[in-house]
Length: 310
Image 1 (cartoon, helix red, strand yellow):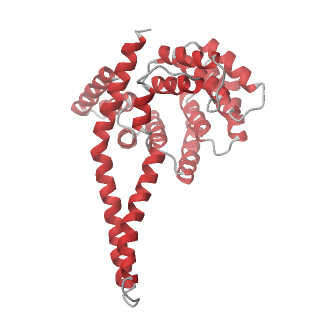
Image 2 (cartoon, rainbow, N blue to C red):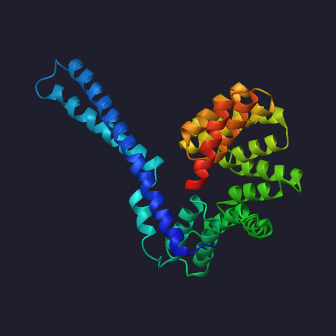
Image 3 (cartoon, rainbow, N blue to C red):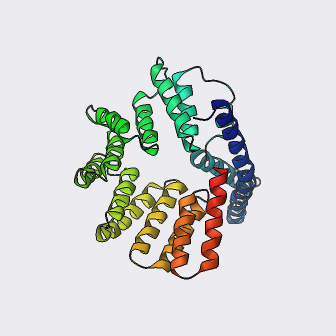
């Protein structure tokens, strides 16, 4: 593992850069939200002209405020608090929950060894009120899976599955992913059981869809695409979840030889989450199959650029 200080310094800089690039986009969206609220306010003000002054002017004030605070609520739901993330990297955590939060950030930035170190430190400390022990074990299993330390990860999820808990569906998903290559039948049972426990569990639905694609069960995959699309629309989840669904739609199209459809789906995936290397790599393959060599090369250059950044 690299020096922890250097890793944390890079993550701090990367987070600051992400927020810097995101700020003008959020500002533009805020202006649009306020503008929409103002337009609604003007419409209602004209509709209320029969009311005495200043009652009919109320919508002109309430409309923009409604648009702004509605937008703030959306940002809070879909984007992490940048200040809290960066502050959590400034000094050494003092609690189990502090180490777990820092591990989550390191995990997101693909510093997996450093994340394992922080998760284990958190689990070795006395739990505080904000510390979720089972969820931390689950995240540790997930990061060990990323490091191909599957035997260690499997021990953790087997233990989580052996006792009732609120994350049993998610631990079954991780177990299914770990068993997919060596025991596909048991892996599918894990995904099905996870969906049975939590029918709205989008993670399990996406994992089962990916499993179908990896096993070349294309008819089942097509059915799962339709089912999962309806689920995500009903739940109104974050863009990153739609990005993964579009990625899987693109993979299905490529396996069926529909390369133009694959390009469209993967382009949508990139629009939802433009920082994921594999979306560009898959689209590059689709462009190449269509003999769009220049576009394929452009996507390959993007893959290399993201690999350097990340």
